[in-house]
Length: 601
Image (cartoon, rainbow, N blue to C red; front, side, top):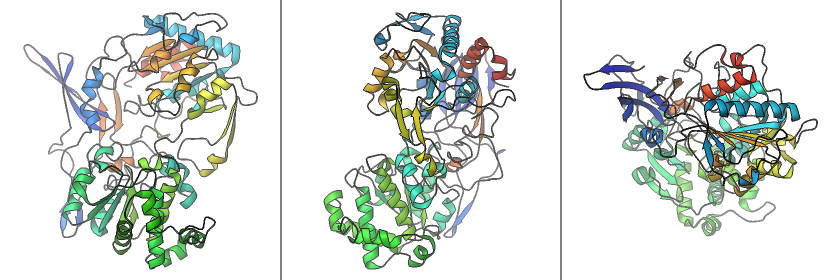
């Protein structure tokens, strides 16, 4: 909660918030944020967990950490490119049929300042016109990959509530952060939870007590911070280093964690990780150093895999360390040394920030790297003490009897789905796919397989979609919410062409910053940051289900933060709750959207 202190000349306020990367204390003087620092626990707070390992006891420090992003929140709040006022494109013409609106000038035209009433009334009129002309499916909307933290204000909460109530053509996200694990590993070991990455939780104690080697493959935990957990796990790795556990890093870049902790660093050429893994398997098979009994009990078609590795398969190429050396540029003797160390000592291996993912699964054929990392873990008895698929960025002891809804949790009151009895979930079945959204708009027709997002079974890969869906109209309006795809999606010139197409009769952009994509909108709605609104959330928790369960185990402490306003919304920006509720009111269902409650309620 916040505390306000008065003096003769200054009004100082101390409040708390949380961002992607840790909880923070905010010091505000006379309505201006002056300082951002981590939250420190007091003597009244509970005792921390204790891990007994190798004759010692370990317990976390009594303070939270913050990521670099957290320390930058003040600068982000006062950024020069904040959207200050509602704006309407200067040469936008509100024609009754949606034609002749100078769409070819999107991205080039200037903007004029508008009042909130003018901008929101225009949005509401256009929605009503589009619904009457084409139906609810004519509006599509898409969020950015991430957004400001909080149970109410996060992108999955208010956005899904508003558009599910209204009805729209949903845009399915592609798994761009975990592509290889999402499409690769579930076919190898049937585990589609947590986005395909294994992410075993509550494993820190096991590793500290049993592991002798930890392989961080495509992993830089001091930078990637265990997901949303800031630098909480940095201390754990120092503990493990001091107790004699050896760290091996495999990464083309001798990364920021490797330079401090690595006993050995391997720098393979980018995109050749799968070859290096196959060469390790070759050493194990030819030297007979894999777990036969585990494979006999738990594996299928191992002989087929074995023949592929030995060169007895269709390609006829033995996957020897020498063969891999030519591809990876790692000397064959070093590959053999890593293979033998892995086989001879209790070894955990992990990729990316939570055991799965990592940059190696995001390049061409990254699915093979992810799949092989899983298969090799199985060859050494995955799940036995010290032998796990786990990275040293998550896995702290947790009280799993305690529950507080995460932002992707369908059990939380506002996140994920509407809860009004008289307003069902999205009534429109038509769906689009984010990487190919421009193709669908520009060509007027698109077909693909795969739902795209996220944490569901492998059957989603074999689901066929057609746009426009039989019985549905095409999309003619795009409501873009937060962030810019111009620097993150594939072939983004197509996005610029899409915005200029007359097929998109109306474009709305709701964001905090004036990004390259924002300037392609007809109407711009300025949202405030999470330091300018109220919210609540558990540090690091994204929720239940297959999305990202137990990701808060990257923290040393479980903590619920009431995110008080540090300052009032700057300029004419407003919270996303206010923006959506105002549009809903103009469409005639504002009371159902808010349930008669304020944002704080």
